[in-house]
Amino acid sequence: MTESVSTSDFTVPRSVTTRTARTLATTTKTRPQNRNVSERWLLRALPWVDVPGGTYRVNRRRAYPGVGRVEVPGALDPVALRAIPVLRELPDEAVLAALAQRFTRRTYQAGEHLTTAGAPVDAVHVVARGKLHALGLGAYGDPTNLRTLADGDVVGAAGLTDPAARWRFTARAVTACVVLSLPRQAFADLADGSAVLRDHLDRLARTPGPATNKRGEADIALASGHTGEPRLPGTYADYDDGPREYELSVAQTVLTIHSRVADLYNGPLDQTDEQLRLAVTALRERQEYEMVNNPGFGLLANADPGQRVSTRTGPPTPADLDEILARRRSSRFFLAHPRAIAAFGAECARRGVYPGTVTYDGVELTAWRGVPILPCDKIPVDDRQTTSILCLRTGEEQEGVVGLHQTGLPDEVQPGLSVRFMGIGADAVVSYLLSAYYSAAVLVPDALGVLENVELGRSA
Image 1: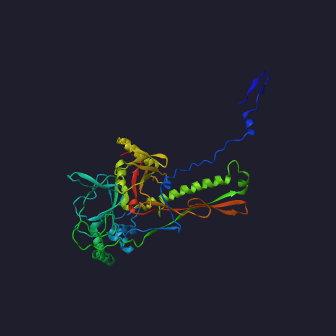
Image 2: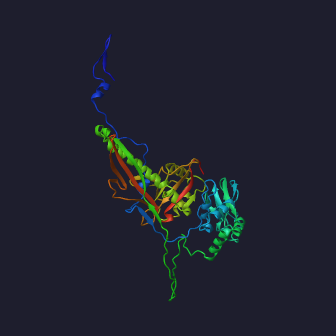
Image 3: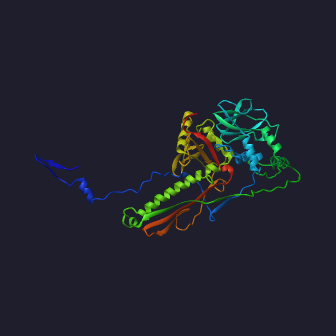
């Protein structure tokens, strides 16, 4: 603003204007600000294992998995039927395709029953879409919810080979559901006409599976509570002869800076340093995204079917988080989208329950049962406004989830991340190769649990 004195004919400035004065002054500049950045709690919270050879092998005891999940994104994939135990080792895909064609599709409205407790198991059912409650009887005859069935769950698999099998629960639709069903009679008719399927079933009947513990691992025979000198059982711990190996994945980019920019426009902020800082941040953000969503090693894709739990009513409730906590020991943290954390807080408020807080890595965070809930915006929220909440036990010594990287890389600037000078081209452009190497491994299935079908758009 100009300070001046007025006369009847003109205005005389009394000092230099601020606009003119700024030509002799400098400005205070910030570093380039970045909107696409998060706290990356997953990368901070995971314990990292150095993988010098680039490949990490997870050895486990031999296990015999139970019923898996049959995901039905559209049409029923015949190969997906191998999630049913009796079909797991069936080699002929033509037989699987014939079975897939015999499934019938039916829609159930909320309140309708899919099965009735005590009735013969006359079909195997695959929940294509929707949610059902498996209702049983409590200790005094009162109804109790045994589990929640949701997308991909299979029930009635035992009825395919056991005519005497009966339903142990009543499955009642909570929402509108689409269910694919294979009648036992249709399965038997195909077995009568298919030598491959008939031989497969005969082989299973002749060679029943070994005794297993509650986790599905081959049992270790023991004796206890005896007296005298009885003959002790011989035993050994069998190993999985096809252990999974995790190769380090990579996120890369080539950063280019014109030498004229790097030479002349380099103060007070170093152009090269700022360009590298922003590119490294983008690499780390992509790394966390891949560790959550990658179909090969991402946490969402690698959760065991037995560790996937659906919400009972839709929104995330205290009972839902208790359910996934109860499925593992030594849970270290939850990982949830910020909107899911807000939805959980709303459900707690509706019930008059107040979640606690814990200080984690110097930050006060919402917690449930003393387990911190870490925000992660990389967990997807789909068009139906549903998402997932993860629960992790971490560390090699705890047989948990670990992050994988390799340290000691050439031109390493951060653990597992290198910046390598690639030279200057004929166009005077300087190039740098940025590489981040990483992966994640779930050492045993119960180290990772997922609460699915977490609805954000409505209340219970």
